[in-house]
Length: 315
Ligand SMILES: [Zn+2]
Image (tube, rainbow, N blue to C red; front, side, top):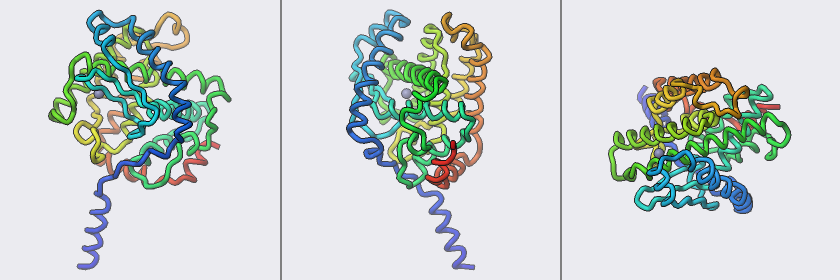
């Protein structure tokens, strides 16, 4: 009995050990990231200064004019890293994060188009934190070709819209941190950090509404970050993990006059019902996040998935 108890204790300790941050340095080659940087960086600069800028109020525009947009190709700390510093007025958009999200959006659209098991995409994301497997980039892991978007016009269209709207939202969220002169997260309480996140989201949603930009990619983004380890050591997630109230606030914004998010050119292509459905997606993610033992569930999902399961989910 004593030995069994010892083993049980060991097992418990093993189950509660913190996940360690994955090393992303080898996920893409330097050449791949440099090539991606050449494609993405002028586009992202244009999203900020051509697509978003006309919808900013004068004071917001003044902030934008003082901002430096950093798009390093060689920063691979985390695939979901987008950040801002108010004191230096810098917005950081690592090419690695954009490339990773682009592939995630393509994989999501592909799985929808060909009716594959969509949970597998979530398994891959959970595995980033909770598995020790050497993971290839998501398209390679799912055995999808790197140019999958070229093979199907639905996949191309949906993934491009998702990338564009998610990047626009994230740029505006980061711009908000600069505009509202938010403090660095290492100097404030978790509670204040959560408030800053909510304020930055609200700022971004206000401008999305002015732009009449449909929020179609945001659910892909938030779904993915909801599947990560909320307590990864050394990460911002430890002080202010994504909360269900943050997701609910975005859902509420989408439900309030959903018509606002449909531009004249999108009339007939996107319906109010689709915007409301996106709000529902956010609420589903929020509900799942509030499930007791969410982290245990994520650990199970992420640590149990095999490369074989990933590679055969859509064939
Ligand atoms: Zn933020």
